[in-house]
Image 1 (cartoon, rainbow, N blue to C red):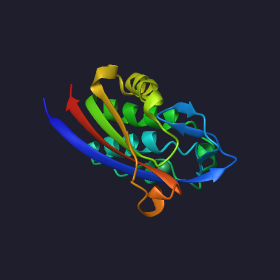
Image 2 (cartoon, rainbow, N blue to C red; image 1 turned 60 degrees about the horizontal axis):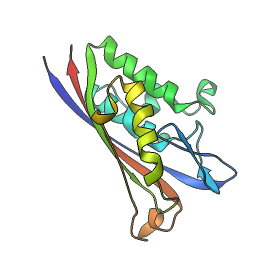
Image 3 (cartoon, rainbow, N blue to C red; image 1 turned 90 degrees about the vertical axis):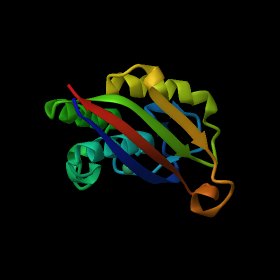
Length: 159
Ligand code: MG
C-alpha cells in the first residue's frame, strides 16, 4: 500500500452571460466563469491535484483547450476521466480538501451539494470531501470580484 498526495489550483474570470458552475453545482449568479469548458474551477483544481498525486502532468496536457472535444465540456466528465486514469494506475482516492476563493456570490448554501457531487465522481463518501469557501477580503483581482479561484489537495492510496 502506498499513499501519494497532490495539489491543484485554478482560477477563471467572471463574465456576463455565462452560467456559474462550481463543484458541479449550478449557482444562481449574474455572472459566470469564462473558459473553453464549463470553467468549473473547483473540478479543475481537483483534477490537477489528482494528476499531481499521480505525477502525470496537468489538466492542460490531458484536455488541451484547443481540442474541440473539450469545448463547453462538462468538467464532471473531465474529472471522471482523471479518476479512471488513477484507477488504471492502481490508485483510489482517500479524501480531498478544497478551498474556493470568491468575493461573491455567497457559496455557503451550495457547499454540501458540491460535496455530494464531488464524492460521487471521486468514489468516496461526502464526509471524505472537505469543501470550504472564503472571500479575499476585497484584496487584489479576486477581491475585486474579477474571478473565482479554487485550491484542492487530494490523497490517493494504491489498491
Ligand atoms: Mg480551469
